Image (cartoon, rainbow, N blue to C red):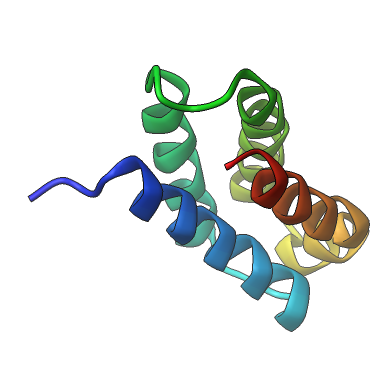
Length: 92
């Protein structure tokens, strides 16, 4: 059974919150973020403002999956992580 777009948004926010709180993550979480963002980007129920945030999250997750030091990548994006979650909450 596929996840609803609300479930996908919740999962996306959970992963971003975990990265922000724990200051670490895994390549598989970055890949999961990519899949969630791709799915949400084609969803017509998602606010256009959220889609611009999703593009930033997608770029973050792509760089995270490819970097040699994922923890440093997450640390350098701490402000972005909290801002993305806050902005997604505002528009969803």
